[in-house]
Amino acid sequence: MQTQKQTRHLVFSALCAALCVVLPLALHAIPRAGNVLLPMHIPVLLCGLACGPLWGLGCGVLGPVLSSLITGMPVPAYLPGMMLELAAYGLAAGLLVRVIRTGRPLLDLYVAMVLAMLAGRIVYGAANALFLRAGDYSLQIWLTSAFVTGLPGIAVQLVLIPGVVRALQKAHIL
Image 1 (cartoon, rainbow, N blue to C red):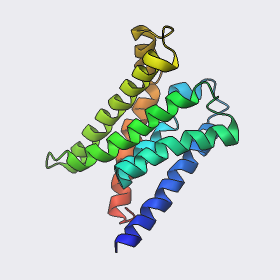
Image 2 (cartoon, one colour):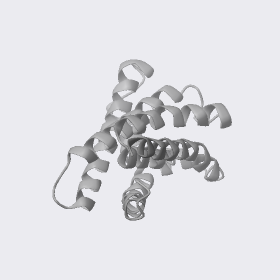
Image 3 (cartoon, one colour):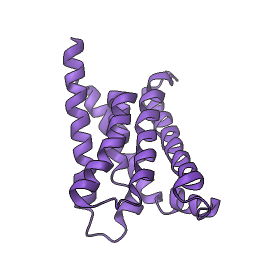
Image 4 (cartoon, helix red, strand yellow):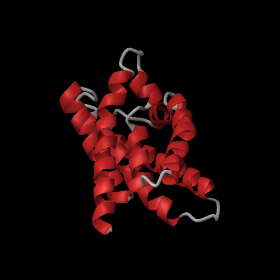
């Protein structure tokens, strides 16, 4: 039974990593869609919430690398920051969904997701401030890029992801 579960998680994680390539391509015609709608964040959060921290971490690292290699997005200058941010998303989502227990599964999912989103943004900001763009990065730039520009993407994530996770659980897919 454990092997079947691992196989399901492997397949689902691979699907999520593939979505990290496909979703940004699908939105490529929209100017700045990557920064505004955050299409890679959706499959990574979904993977972490549905499959656990290690699968989410792997998807968070592999997804942007595959996308960069196949499509050139993200460009190499932004790839390390995105890898760190998305790896933190997947890892935190997977860990938090396992430990948060309010007695209300949908609330657990939302709390885990919001905290994972904050963790990813903090990792992204810290990485930029400390070594990726040291001296060229400010609190204002971080707040704008992490919370203002991506607000539509954050809203999409909050609406879409919990419903998808619950549907996958009800269908006994995960």
